[in-house]
Image 1 (cartoon, rainbow, N blue to C red):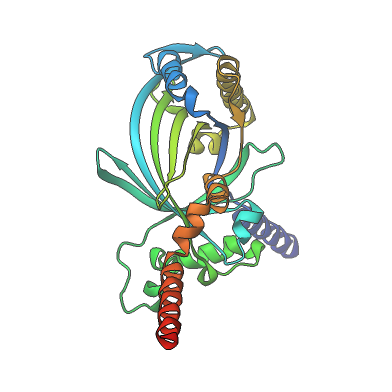
Image 2 (cartoon, rainbow, N blue to C red):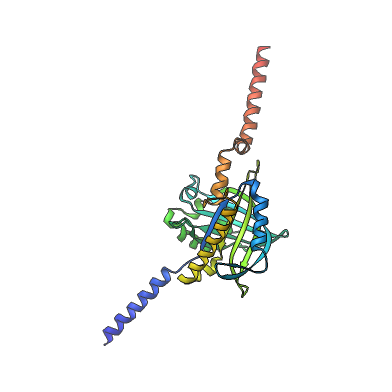
Length: 300
């Protein structure tokens, strides 16, 4: 009898440990990203405002309401020297969110690669350590200085599948986003989804820009939902995407991260390369001019 009890206890403990180890860390992010031609931006947002920004509308038999907002996001992305994150479609950034020039929130976001359908991905969030001990050597690191010691260990766990250590990470692209957004809520006032028009620009010269619209389901609600509610939420998002695509046929689904899109623009830009190597160009010009003057002086 005692042996049966012991075995049962071990099974219970094993089950508990298994559940803890496999618990969802972070939130499931389900979204569509659609690139927007610059010529369509104004009309597109006017259409979104008139269709979804009103007090009440019906979509897929759901009674919903929309609430508009404009916010500014400053995103510092991180990567490895060999751009491993970009190649693996991993996104790691330090985000600052502003409204009316007031900093509302800042956090670290790690986004894993998309699912097979290129719609769902996992997003793990980390609070920025505002009380970092200045005697801690990690304060000198551009990424580690943002994390507490416990979050550094947690970050290490999530980066392990990519064979990456947090102290190998370095700064990469920095973006500014002006986000015109409609928050979609149900009759109880609970958030269901957001429709966001992003004007994305390079934080540095020559300030390349592009536009995209994101149709994103509320992460907390989607993560905690059962299969039936997730199916209903996915149907809502697909319905919005289809309606926008029918009205604006030049919209194109592009699920790449903002980091990858801007990095491509930067890599293809001669002005960006000149800006990145500006000091070397100046130094080379000085050395070249000095050499010419020296040789000319010797010939005289």
